[in-house]
Amino acid sequence: MRLLFQLGAVAVVAFGGSAIVGAAQWNVPLTLLGGLATAVLSLYVYVWVVRRTERREPVEVTGTGAGPAFGRGLLIGVGMFGAVIANIAFLGGYRILGWGSPAGAVALLGFTAAAVVVEELLFRGILFRIVEQRIGTWASLALTGLLFGAAHLFNPHATLWTAFAIAVEAGFMLAAAYAATRNLWVPIGVHFGWNFAQGGVFSTSVSGSNAPQGLLEGVTSGPYLLSGGEFGPEASAYSVLAGVVVTAGFLWLARRRGNLVPPRRRSAPALAG
Image 1 (spheres, rainbow, N blue to C red):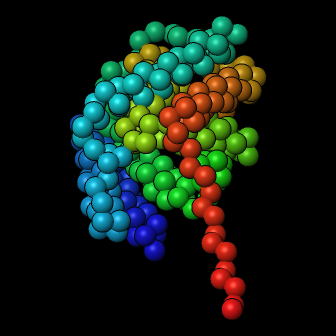
Image 2 (image 1 turned 135 degrees about the vertical axis):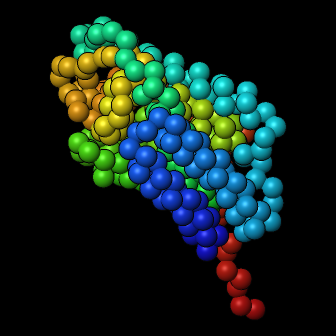
């Protein structure tokens, strides 16, 4: 019930914010303000519902150290996608044609903020965290990562391969980031940096979705496993490889810090005397 109550509370805000941002139809100020408001309200509702259902302070979203933690994650996310797009470009799968649209990048800033914060609260803050308490870090990472990939099967141009790619490079990796740091600001930063670099900077498709042009006017081409096709670079084999490497790094850090949670053992039934 705790899991369902928390998911329901944040989902209500997510659906409302999605409707508002969608109605804005990429109007720059409305999309920016609507997206930022959705992100802030989602965090507020998460804090409220955790306090109410768990009788504790949600330290995973505490304001203390939030800026530096988000910044570290942001650098990782931007660096990851920068490395991916550089490798794709090296093999001729991406070309920059010129400058794009600063206004489009601003609109994508708000849209990305809302999507990233909501997804991290739902999948890492609630699902991964609570399920991990029962079945341990490894099983929870696998389960919630696959669910995250499956949730993207409803995106345009999605296939089983794209769902698997999202599960590896985002679902597993972002859960590992939470396990290593035990706060949501780092995975929020990684997720935001990865998504905004795709759409807001390099103007590539983000998980198959159409969006305004970002800061650069670019075009992708070439084999599907190189460029990701219409789904975008997230379906590229380079993205999957980057996800595997960063996931391994976070899991190594989680183990070193003693943050890996073992499965909960069931107590043996008492023997009748």
